[in-house]
Amino acid sequence: MPSSQREPANEAVEREIAVMLVGFRWTATPHGLLPQDLLYLLGRYSEIVGDTTRKQGGIPIHFSEDGVTAVFGFEVGAKEASRQALAAAAQVDRRLGALGDRLKQELGCATDFAIYLHTGLAAVGETGDNATRTLTVVGKTINVARQLAAQHNNLESARIVLSEAVTIAASLDTRAAKWCEIALPNDERLKVTSIAGAKMRLQTEPVIAA
Image 1 (cartoon, helix red, strand yellow):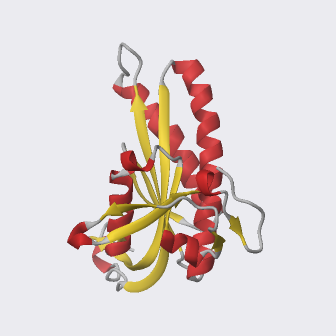
Image 2 (cartoon, rainbow, N blue to C red; image 1 turned 120 degrees about the vertical axis):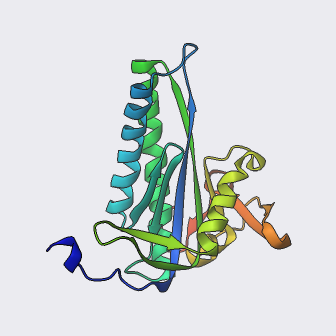
């Protein structure tokens, strides 16, 4: 169909979603990485995050040099969305860790990453013109996930960090969790913990470990 005859973009709807934000931290060799080397690394890391996200029922919505943002909950409820995000985070952690070990031997560069999870309401729809449409998710939930990632240095370098909202939505046993708070705009506070530190358990599933 010619672009001039395309239907208007879908109207936005409000949904309860889970967000997984995978942040990349590139540490180059002493001589630095060539741009094409960085693109190669970025491609390999992004492929793993995107593939894992889709296999767990989510959709990657944003790729950049700094990381990948993925969303779960387009066809399931809040509890299942959060569990999908947790499962994806555990798999991404394992797969990126293995990739990093291999690339360090091949290219001599050390690449680190961290995974952040949050859940809540967001507006979901399409943006773009008649030629190109992009799935877009906006709202406080996405903004809070980005705030969480931005304050990673205050979280003792935990590999998988999740908000209290995720633990509640996914019915995690958090009795052993070690909590801390990050400051949000408008004097709000967000309670967060990590999977590795908490040794948390789904009520009907085995322990989730990083």
